[in-house]
Length: 525
Ligand code: FCB
Image 1 (cartoon, rainbow, N blue to C red):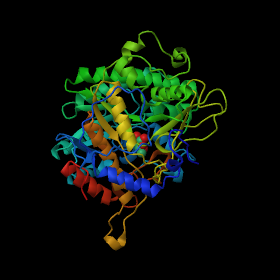
Image 2 (tube, rainbow, N blue to C red):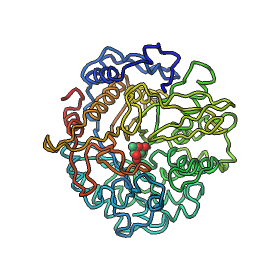
Image 3 (tube, rainbow, N blue to C red):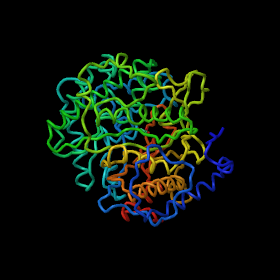
Image 4 (cartoon, rainbow, N blue to C red):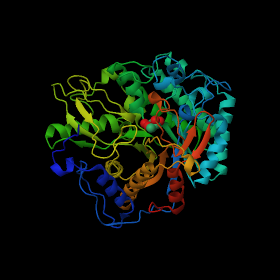
C-alpha cells in the first residue's frame, strides 16, 4: 500500500514507476548552475516536488574523493586466524536460526587474505578513498589487554597497500563486531565499555596513526544498539528498550572518550562519524506530525551527533529525557562533548513520519538497513512516532525505495543545522541481484545500480552547488558481501563475488563508477 502524502496530487500517487526512473535519470545528467545560498528553513521541503530545472552536467570539486566502503565482518573471513578472538557476530551466526540461509562470515569474501586483489580493483576504478573497518577482536581478542601484533600488522599492510595505490585509508573503529568477551560482560549497556573502547581507540591511533588520519568511531550507532538490545534482531538478540537506552548512552560516552584517546595518541588524527541517517518528512502538516518528525530526527539521525557537537541529548522524547533509565551520571555531558572534525553519514532511503499518539498506530514495519518494529500504540512509550518507508520510487531488490532527492535534503539539513561542516558520505548504495551473463563474456549488466549512483551523485552535486561542503562519497560496497541478517541473499557490490570460488567480476556499474571518478562528473556513459 502506498503512503498518501497530503501535499501531493492524486496523480502523484499514481506515479508510474518507469516515469519516475526516467525523470530521475534526466536529473542525473544534470547538475546545478545556480548557486543558491543556504537558507535557514527548519523543515525539509516537499519530497515529491519536481526537481529544479536549472541543471547542467554534474561536476564535483577538484579535490572531491570518490570512494568505496566495506566492513570487517562483512568481507574479511578468517574468523579465527592469527590470534583473532570470537566476536558477537561469530557467535550469532554460529547460532542456528538467526541468519537467512544459515550464512556466516567465516569466509565471507576472504578479503583478509585477498586484500591486495581488492585494492587493485579500487585502483583500477580510479578510487581515491577506501572506507574499511577494523575488527576489534583481531586487535584485542577479548576486548581488553595488550594488542595482538599480528592483528596490527594485518591492518598496517592494508593501509600501506592503499597508500601505495594513492588511496586514502578511512577507518571505522567499530562496524558492529564486538569481541564476545565484552558481550559476556554485559555488552554495550555496561558503561565500562566506554573505557575499553577508548583503550582500543588509543592503541589504533598509536600504532596506525602514522598511516591513517581519518577515523570514525562507530558505524550506525543507533542501528546496532537498537537492533541488538532494543528489538533483538542483531546480536546479542535482546529486546528491551531500557537496555537500548543504556547501550546508546555508553556509546555516546565511548565516542567522546575515543575521540580524546585518539587525539592524545596521534596529533594528526581527525575524528568524525559514520552515522546512518534518513531524511524524515512529516506525513501531514499537523503540529503533531511535525513534532513527531523532529523526534525521529533526534532519535534516528542526531542522537549521537548532537551529543558530540553540543554535549546534550537532542529532544527525542515525548516529555523529559529519561536520564535515569539511560544510566546518565552528572558530568556525562562533558564526556560526550567532542566537536567532530567532520561529519560522516550514510544515505539509503527516506522516511515519512507521523505521530503515534496514544492509540494503536498500526503495525507496518520498515525494511532493510534500518528495520523498525512497531508495537501497538506506537514504537515505544518514549518517542511515540510512526516511521514508514514510502514506495513511490522504485524498490531495490532489498525492498528499499530509491529516492535520490533524499541525499540532497539530508546533506542540506546537516549543512544548515551544524553550520556548514565538512561532510563525508560514508555509505550509499543498493542491492540488485544481477549476475554474470555468459553470452556477454561474463559481464554483469546491472543498469539499475548505475542509474542509482548516477541519480544520487547528481543530487549530491546539486547540494555542493548549493553550498554544502561535501568532501567524499563512498559507494556501498566494493564487493558483494555478508549482509547481516540477510546473509548472502542481497548483493550491494559494485564487484560481483562468486562465493564458491571467490572470483571477483567488476559489474558494469563499477566500471561506470570508475569512469565517473576519473571524469569527476556523472554525465559519463
Ligand atoms: C548499512 C551498513 C552496512 C551494510 C549496508 C547495506 O546499514 O552499515 O554494513 O549492511 O547497510
